[in-house]
Length: 126
Picture 1 (spheres, rainbow, N blue to C red):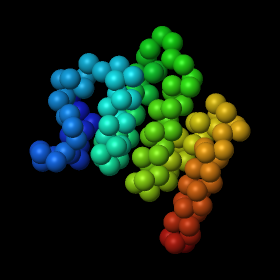
Picture 2: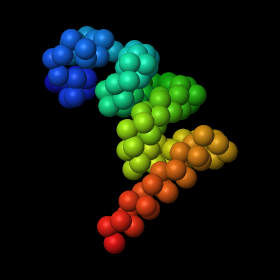
Picture 3: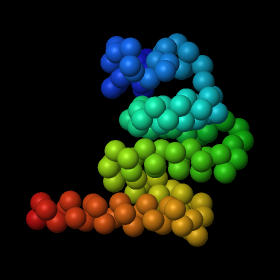
Picture 4: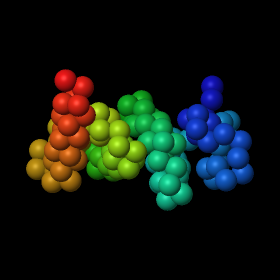
């Protein structure tokens, strides 16, 4: 199994801080979340989004996960999608956040931005 960090990181010494696949497989949701934050801090948004995704997968299999923690992971990944202009993915995460809290102003803003960008892009292909 390859690490999500190897997809775009390559073998450059300027790549993410840690791309040891064996170590990555041992991480739990919290560990993946921390790894994702480190990657975001270094502007590795694709790898950070993948790490947030791994953390969210762990949340699905763990017995009890606080909703606040899961929302924190979704917010981190949504922020990556926004930086990378991946508006379809941003819309999905914003809608998931809104399903937990319909009054979430940041998620509403992300949803509105994503829908606007997607409709603009769709209009160009008409």
